[in-house]
Amino acid sequence: MDSNYVIALDQGTTSCRAIVYDESGTTKGIKQKPFTQHYPFPGWVEHDPEEILRVQIEVMRDVIAENGIRADRIRALGITNQRETVVLWDKETGQPVYPAIVWQCRRTAPICQGLIERGHEPDVIKRTGLRLDAYFSATKIKWILDHVPQSRDLAAQGKLLAGTMDSYLIWHLSGRTTHVTDMTNASRTLLFNIRTLDYDPDLLDLFDIPRGILPRIVPSSGIAATVDPTILPGRVPIAGIAGDQHAALFGQACFSPGMVKNTYGTGCFLMMQTGSQPVFSNQGLLTTIAYDLGHGPQYALEGSVFNAGSAIQWLRDELGVIQSAPECDSLAGTVPDTGGVFMVPAFTGLGAPYWKPDARGTITGLTRGTGRVQLARAVLESIAYQSLDVMTAMEGDAGFPIPLLRVDGGASASDFLMQFQSDIAGIPVDRPANIETTAFGAAALAGLATGLFADLNAISACRVSDRVFQPSMGSPERQILLDRWQRAVATTIGHSATPHSDRHF
Image (cartoon, rainbow, N blue to C red; front, side, top):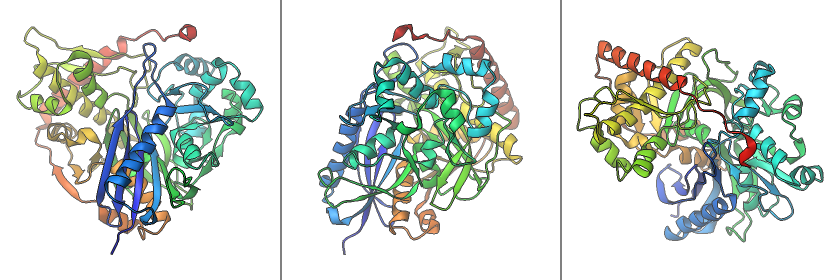
């Protein structure tokens, strides 16, 4: 008997993927292709939305063709996307008016600083659960409207649309008929009130963004649009939408308050499910929507590490210290320690719990004996240290210790990193057999809406542990390392960059 399938479109920061799942949650096929990263000025990061759309459709069609999947067996599509990255496009032509400004981009830091100095941040936190930081979407939208000729005129004429990458993809996939986003993506814009569950009029005024250009907000699980048959035959519904980290939380089956996951990707993103009421942080974390199944949201605390896997890429691409990411792992295991070297990879500032957008990366403790092996190990250890900083803040807000960390993402395949994470945090680290939980989360949301998965218990049953790493480091050694890490962070914060002005435009 033929199986039914759900396809996850995973639109990431550096690549687009399409993954096919059956009703047991088993991966039946995967296709991935990178797209171009653009760095026009220091601290600026851009993507070409049209390239992303082209690549995303290409991998979707390829995975269907290569696995011989009939259109009538595709139950639904689920979409997960790099959050906060925004694009504005012409409603009539479908063409972007400017490249997508990526979540990593720091060009709008001066706008945020100006709003902070005018005393707006406490009210913004109260309404959105977010900090005033260039990480989020609102100042990116404002920057495009303020700098791209005719964009405000197009907006006033009802000819301009704006959204995160899920909105852009769905609008095109639906044959340019449906402009929507889900509650998780909306909650990352600095425009969404997490209490009223809608765009906030006062915030729209603060950022000078017209509501009419923004997408309609829909649940994370539910039929939101139908794919144009010229793109994919069969009138397949788009039934799951979630920002990447929310999708990973869902894919990790973190359905109960207090459960925590960490996704090790370009950055690290830790989320704690907190239930049906928002919990506001006193520790520099964010309050966000975890997911919405159509009957009210579940909330989460989140801490974001801006540079994690990107530090490994830096070793490979900019320094040539390693030839591949797995080589970093193998090198790190050949020495007992870093020889006193600590790296803080604040290439685009420090995220939670520090929120220092003008911090820049540092390496401390260098000696004449420092070599590529020590650097490789220091980079991997830096990912674990940064993650622990966020976990410690979460424990402070939650009022109880985190008993176990569920992990996923590309770098979670590193046994060295996962063991060091367990050692430095002093808790077990649970890695699933399928570490691509972001894509599975999108598929699960879509499958839940269309009956492929009966309920949350059926989704939980799909998660199988591959390995649980147990801590083996003694407390005295752990404390010495943490003290040295904190000194390295203090050095990084003390070495700040001058924010770049709009003279580059």
